Length: 379
Image (cartoon, rainbow, N blue to C red; front, top):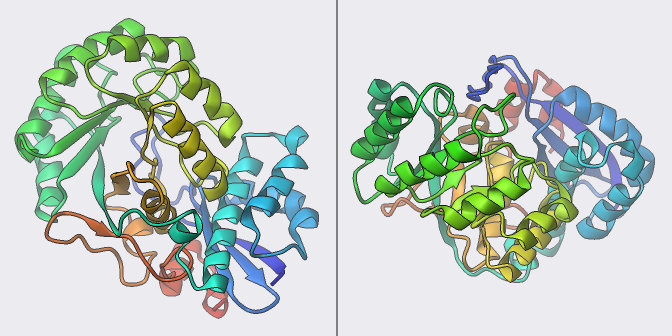
């Protein structure tokens, strides 16, 4: 089975808020779906955390390298793409685009072999995993209104992030966390994401230390992106003094970038994003290195239904990965997968056991979000 063509479909029209200082608008494109077309007919699907314009430009560079290549050798083909593009912006749009291609190639390998991707990664340790609802922080008096409807859907783990947190004063920070803990109850997991990768993040090391102490009082499960994403030494120091786990890594790409952070002890929990870091092939190697370093692997998943599907397959292949991120309120999560997603009575999400990523793309939804009717003829 050979790669015949690769198409890109940017998602627009219903883009959810990001919480960034330069806030996203509904027509902004930050996620792009990848379709790998083959000479034998099957289509592989992937997702890229990058705008359509950058993905299409990257595909034009990569096209001579992937056209006619095997569609069922994801690691080899992805490494070929990486190796031949070092000088064109390693870690940027091209690496992000290779991530989507890699996910789609794993999807095709699974379909060709009749196996879910998790089994091809070495075996499935689990068939269900707990999703945590990922929501933006609001003013303290609005947090209950944000959290209670999601709790009613059956979620038992919640991450709140960005918004005014860390950008105003310590009183506001604590009031937000206090309101959130009260809304979800003492038994639910609560995680806090400061959003240190936002433009001109104001929080410094001393702020992060004081905030970690406050979060411990509310039994916060982890403190995410507490610092600027380049502040390696500060992350190491923060982890040493913090009473709660420190997490991060969503902006890093490829295993070579993650390794210094893992070896230095910067994280208790590492959070690569499969739609940016190099795809399933790279994320698997990052997760293995994390395990060697005593760091838990929990994927970052602020992306699409295809990113979530990849995260679920990865979670199935690692025994101690017991949480995946679920971006609540996003049609690119809820509607892009045919049939949607359903929590069970325990608030768990089933890991698809069908071949490949295990999900079918809702082509009508993709046509709506991308503004392209050609997708209706792909399958």
